[in-house]
Image (cartoon, rainbow, N blue to C red; front, top):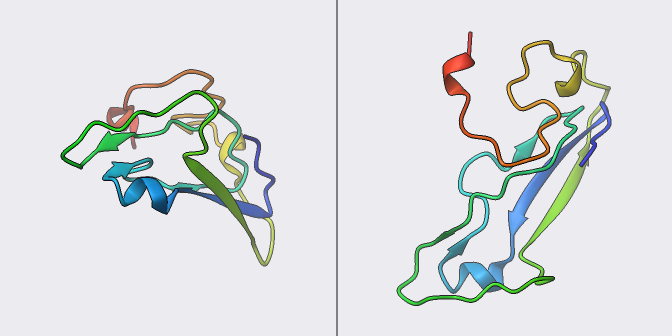
Amino acid sequence: VKIPADLMGRLEGRSSLGRLGIVVHSTASIFDPGWDGKPVLELGNLGRMAVALTVGMRICAMTFEELSSPAEAPYASRKFAKYRFQDTPTESRIHEEK
């Protein structure tokens, strides 16, 4: 997903899955202006039964919001952006915060 500097993105799970206890993105659903990488889904089952997710199944949607002006420092241009250009699932880099 490559988001331009004048938009922000939001990843939301489908309510049909939420009613079964499936959480698609548990924490950071907002994607900064300038994000460039593959989103990591933080999937979890909070329900009491197993739920089968199949290849090609729609489990989430990304929406975009237009900003009043482009971001001054888009995510991908930040020198120390922890998850810049990630293309595989990436472990937490919280220890790199300054």
